[in-house]
Length: 464
Image (cartoon, rainbow, N blue to C red; front, side, top):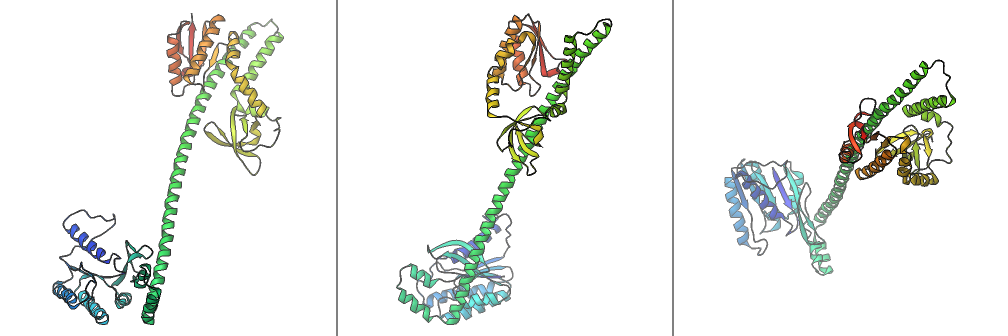
């Protein structure tokens, strides 16, 4: 019920008392008070204060008498619904008598049930707060190095007046300060030293708590970043799975169409019972079956890779080909067992067996680059043998340029129908292609693919 606030002059003790009183009255008037969310305030019938604005300018009887007059009035009014604020209690008279009188006044107010906050320099009141249940020490933190208050109220730790340290900082002769220190009683000196050690321990604990608070904030930030990255990975994984399902659906449709063609050829050959299959027909059928097997089953691709041997041990950063997916990837990490690797193919990260990887050497990269630069020319120079154009993975501008070249070669090859593969995806590439076909002079009509042709992943164009 009682707080004894100690500390040096200009340390903020009086400001603390005024702040306590002002916030209490503001709250009782219904005003918004600048406190943290978890704060609580008491409601008092009386707020009684003895706070002198002129502190220690003239240490005379009149000052002491003025204080005592106020305190006598406060003692008459104070009850269990009162808040009492006393500044420099017991000051203005003999220190021994002043300390004794201050202790007695606090005890009387406590017996009357009042809540009390009092400031003082007396070591006796610090000891009183330490020894008395219900009375708590408090101190206003003061930076001796800068001679400035920090305006932090520390509960549970008595403050030091720091008269000697402040005098040194202000330039007083060391001999004068030393002599003054020698005049202080050993008991009082030991008490001040203990208070100083407590203050140093408190500062160290406060620094550690601040470090822990910063570490906790950093840990929360790292955790939040990790959560965002995980969500991004999950989104990318879902996107990759969506693309994989789309490609699988298109692959199944194309494979089913090729299988139907082979079955039709077989049915036609069955009708020709008296005819022997030519070597060319046999080779064509076998090649078609092999193509179906390799296209439809990635396991076959891995089986065909069984005889492959890496030219050297894989390293982080190597570019490889994932045999089962037939996609390029980059090595992100290698397991200790030297049998598995973490790879990234596009935005997808996955762990796979090293036996599923083929190293793409620098020469192969350069060869692939040259091959990509010749892809359009070679693809369209062979347009008479193929009526299909695959635009997946291209931008709209790239795709439309390739469509023009493809249609030009198709017309020159006397084709009447062509298939343009743009994939399902978001539909942006499909819309761009169909809008382009709508105004192309060589196109009579166009439509989406049907079941077995690739459905909405392809556009079939009829040429003029």
